[in-house]
Length: 395
Image (tube, rainbow, N blue to C red):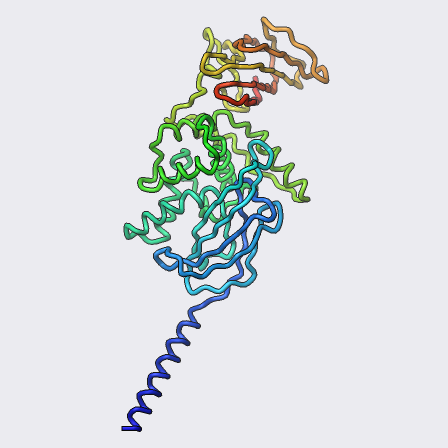
């Protein structure tokens, strides 16, 4: 009997030891790093990694770090997980690439990642918005990889950017000169320009996530209008300048993807209502508005053209300025306005007074090009906001 008891105890110890060994052997050591970007998060922002099980439920294990530079970089030199899935949480201040500064209010962004695929893991608006949709699809029995792919395609479709063949959201970087970076930069810039909602940025994102979660579309008319209107007033040249200057100040040289064509694709295809669609009318008295043409358009000089900006009861202009720059001896003429030299003989401008629409007829001769800059201070809601529209026209 005593021998039997000893045998059972030994067998129990062997089993326990075996189980313990199996558990330890499933634990892997990782070195993880990446960037947190809206624009880039600022040094000192908090970064937390939370281990998730296969159902994306927290296991209770987590690690903590901080953003270590103003480019949003973070690193976890040695973390141990039994699962392939983690959630990243970033909280703190960030650089706003649209306005060119650091907002007062902090934000929180998330990302769910399969770390068996890559050790470079980023956090951005795409990863944040996709997270709840991925969880919803996973609960419906769809695999993580397929859920992640579906959520990303659905989100890109909201912005008419589907079928672009870009990488997973956690691999994207707004500073990249490639299409992947351009898609992230455009969507990030449009969303932060949630024009006219009156909501704080974090609240607007939360509403977006809630709307997107169950069907992968945006059904809220107020969110649709905010996206279309925000995109309409984006100054992509200023965004590029803001980003390159920001990184230059950190001793880094970047060349972001030029998002003009992506922006025009969204604006030309979207069915979302644009609250400011009357700001730049397509035509006035049969003349084509140069400001509604895509950037770098070659025009037909036999047609009639103008620069036109509307001031309406819904959209008041407090003032506006128009500047023209040409390297081709000014082979054009404009009637009804008095131009003044602005700094040099190749640049001329006009200033308009409060609440008056601008209509400037143009005619062209020979061949050439002109760079048109418009700066309009507008009062559609409580703040006075400056909108810029720049176009290069060839003939």
